[in-house]
View (cartoon, chains in turn orange, blue):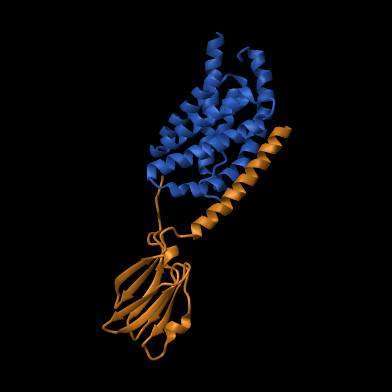
Amino acid sequence: MTRGDKILIAIIIIVNVAALFFVKNLAFNYENKYISIQVNGEEIKKITFDSNMVGKQIPIETEYGYNLIEIGDEKVRVIEADCPDQLDVKQGYISRVGEVIVCLPNKLVIEIKGGNIETDIDGLSR
Amino acid sequence: MKNTRKLIFLSLLVAIGLGLGLVESMMPLPFVAPGAKLGLSNMVILITLVVFSPKDAFVVGILKSIVLTLVTGSVTSLFYSLSGSVLSCLAMTIVYKYFSNIFSSIGVSIFGAMTHNFVQVLVACLMMNNFRIFSYLPILQLTSIFTGYFVGLTSKYAVNNLRKSFNKFDVSH
């Protein structure tokens, strides 16, 4: 084991541990994260997160009721609703893939979806 | 006469590589990373490279891949195996020829293992059209340090002993 070997091993460990952290951050950062707004089980709107969408308010008026949602930096919340219990307003922001806000009286579901969680297996090699 | 002896020794090395490859494929994975292998048959290529010549190492590597495919019967693994052994052999040749004053056989072996992993991930990406597999590369490269280290260490001792016996038979270059 020469000096060169030791330096080589050290460099490989450093580079790969760094790469591992980089990959880990990347993996939890879903590229195509979007807000899916569903009324009565049907998706009526898809909103992708964007920097110029921050602070934007979107009213949703349907035959079941009225909700006003606000989009923040990679997060979303309901700020106004005409339902009696106001549970959706009290829930606050949701930001992670899979989180949902449900307003049952208005049959509204706001869900954050990621493009790559729908299938279990991406590929198989044997 | 000399050529026949060399032929016999090379085919013996191929056979040892085959045996090691088979034993390796039966072994339960000793690592946390699925898909990581010990790379025992890489040992044979490294030994051939050091004792004989790079050209012979290529021959042994290619033969080993093809015959191992015939033995295990999985044709798709031929692409992985063949591309991996040819390119890792190339990397080891370059490192052994031009940088052997910096790296010992351990370093050469680590380079071989790293190239092998890289090529396999690349082939997997191309075959599945999914470049996210590259996120798995760091884990494989970290394991390649350990496997490369032990393969290099083993072949260092093997080469010392083989040189003696090969000199007796007058076959090495």
